[in-house]
Image (tube, rainbow, N blue to C red):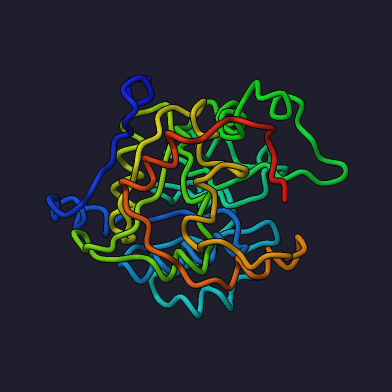
Length: 268
């Protein structure tokens, strides 16, 4: 990958392309999964002027509350309907559930993958444990006819809702993304620009490990160092409530270049 050989990663900033932001603001974002990530992205998307179609595994009738809180730009649907309706689709489900994503309806679509590999009893993936694949490569294998882009996986929902800024702002935060399709990566970068973020392209899905758990790019840049002595559950609770810290594109590039690949899977 050229970026790795030269020691640089490409970043995209939206200040020069207002017509692109206007076009993207007319799009529909399909969201599969209404956990903390899915709901936070839906909130940011609606506030940015996008239409959102929400879905979960329990059925659209269970989403009356979230849809009401989001307002008229949001509606509930089944996962297949959200996949069909979305110009871009966010697959905000646990990695263990990725094989339940609707492949037919996602065919030909750009799919944002915010999933992370978390180790817990009864769930392991040998290809991930051996670093044969990244988790996003695993998702891309299932969604063979889609264009998977790894993004929105290394920042917490609270920080996502705090750190957005208009294009050109001096304290605008950047988010990393990875993917095998250049057009899909541009589409996701354009979307994230509308949502209030710059982006740094880390390369292919094979390089997406650079922003996964256990790397310098995962979570901590946006929240700072935690208090010492926290137990794992205390750390998670602290991170979920921490105030967001702006992170510029230059810092994302530095941290990506410094990453060293270790064992896969979220580890405290």
